[in-house]
Image (cartoon, rainbow, N blue to C red; front, side):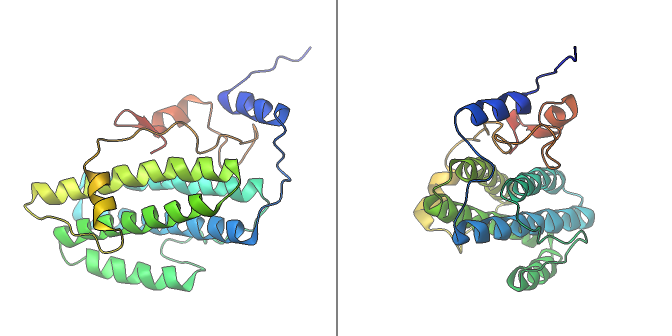
Length: 230
């Protein structure tokens, strides 16, 4: 008799299967477009932060780039789940979405001017992420998609708190350019929010993007400042 080892991913997958969840469930064209956009948007954040860490050697850029890598993997899980072609190129700084390609070049140029400019770039990226995630959550009717987006949203809100805090320590107050001022103030005025280990809540046990969900390595990488998957 074979021994079955139940990881968190196994258990969640079985629960969702028993509750009627199907990986073949259809999603709308706008939901598909949202997944493709966020896959590359998370890649942009990771690539920019990695480059800015190399230039300025400020630890938050390294920490948050690791978080963006997990966000990128979470979007990869959604690509797998709904059988969508991956738009992300393996090379850093290369994007299928032309608007993101232009934005990447602009952000790298701006962030290379000074450390303060780099921190402002980080806050701006998180503003864009937060706005897009909020809109995608509101327009998605799929629980699996909404769960992943909600967890990523908590992470992005934590990131913008980190960047604006770094700016504040350097006597610079960040002024939002994408988010409504009241929404921005509410976010930065709230303490850090922890994720719910939900980036891969419906992953199959052998999902390429979520294969470490139940393992020690995943737990060690995912826990940051007391939070999971942020």
